[in-house]
Image 1 (cartoon, rainbow, N blue to C red):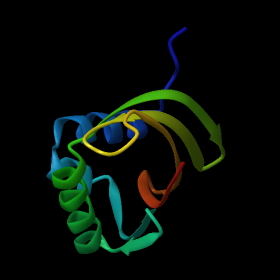
Image 2 (image 1 turned 30 degrees about the vertical axis):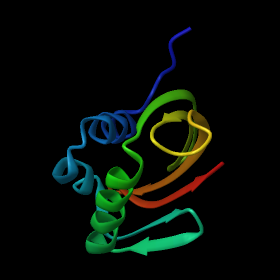
Image 3 (image 1 turned 45 degrees about the vertical axis):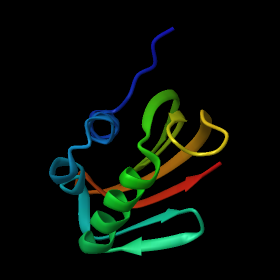
Length: 109
């Protein structure tokens, strides 16, 4: 059964899988924060560095499995495949939005 994915999350998935850094960065508010692998990356510059480093290190792609919406928050479970131990893995992406921009992203297993 196909899942329904809000447009901004679908764009997040598409830009991630295409390694489209500029469009990916454009999804985030200037003061956004990402939490991944125990670290916070706040602001566009830090998020760009995180993305470029992660893409280079893991060469990953994602496939959304479950998406849940609650107000301005969206939770997505995705299968991540890449050059990392245990691939593929399922990760949860918790998004918060304001004015159609990602303000917070928390990634966890």
